[in-house]
Length: 107
Image (cartoon, rainbow, N blue to C red; front, side, top):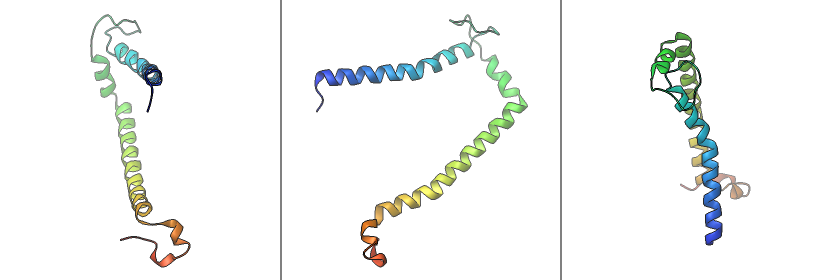
């Protein structure tokens, strides 16, 4: 069980880590909705026009399609190999397999 000091320290480290990870993302999103064509912080106005320009770019759309197809393929591959491996690891006692190879799996 954690004491009060350890718990507070863990909470402080967790909060600092989350802030370190999420603050750059928040700044990037805040700058991306600015209506100025250059970086100003804080943003002067709000617009989604930059996202519209990116989504109208055919090169961006082609690379997005490629990225999504690669992500889908790697997910399918990981599932095809990972699920049977997890089932085998759960059902079989591999230490006993060295002694009795014919009956290592529980059914």
